[in-house]
Length: 257
Image (cartoon, rainbow, N blue to C red; front, side):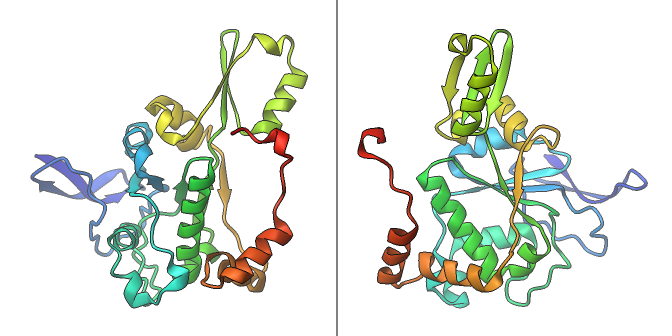
């Protein structure tokens, strides 16, 4: 049997109430009455492959993890009634504490909602689907600055006795240019968050002192609305035309197949 703290007043450092449950399963849908002053710093939304490491790598005092199984429903193509039939979306909305039907944020559980995905095409697609959900049906969270995207590094560089995490190819090239004997380094490319052990995930993605986050903001609402409609909507021709006009084409000899 485990104790789960339901209401905490951090100003005075005491517990108002403790409720006991029959098992140790993580609980995300806990109803808290009255005092919502303890908004948790980080509610992480991660792909299921990284769920185990994320839970072990987080700080349990102020971070929660909600694994997402695969890709959520593309909400750009459906009405609210159909969206609420999705178990994944219902779990996410319930965990956050946002009323998707009324827009009520008074029971919001997290001050930061952080999307954590792999740095590949599938990860980008999952992040796009989640951002579409937040923009179309939980827009006040975006406008209020609650939505973030984790920026995990692509590389781990072991140089001498030091382990260095490098965010991307450009940063790696810069490091090589500034470092003496970079050829002696052991460079590991992370294929995904699931490859990281809990300590690595904590340092690179979850620890507020060392992680990198990108806050999601809306600079041009009209343009943002149009981008979601074109890229996630049902008009295939409009999407193809946008991709052809804006894609960055890579020379054939640089493609790693």
